[in-house]
Length: 224
Image (cartoon, rainbow, N blue to C red):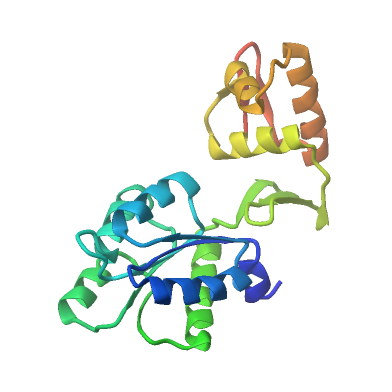
């Protein structure tokens, strides 16, 4: 899968207080990404980040009282790895120095070309891959692509039900921890019986293979 195709499986947050530039750039991003979230100020950008957990973040350096660097600083307190890059009409030395502290993918100036944007997104994808953010290993033969939401076993996509996906994503999110029966049934979102929950996990374990999901009797499940 080339980089442009991979972008189609990802989401992006774009924040800029220049609404004309925001709208024109948004149209370009919508051709590239699965979903685009936009904000015209830093406060809304942070709210969208918290709510939507985008794969990639692009921020205008100056957006009123809360600029892109401030937004990046707040995000970095919670997430050290999500790819973030700054866009600006200026190349101020102090801003560049501050940006260097935030493990940013890039700092590009307006106006930028489509090729420049694609180059930065290619770097973002490389960052995601290096951090293992696009794939989660389940066992020696099986992994989950979090962007495309496809489970691959022995290089073949697996077919999972909606509830099996819910269970798998929760177990991977809480990897190394015990997910209790109560928590799992709550996330599935309906009144599921204990035996039905056991059957669901048993079917999922059979699809994923041995040494995938471990059962802790009368407590819950875990992926190690």
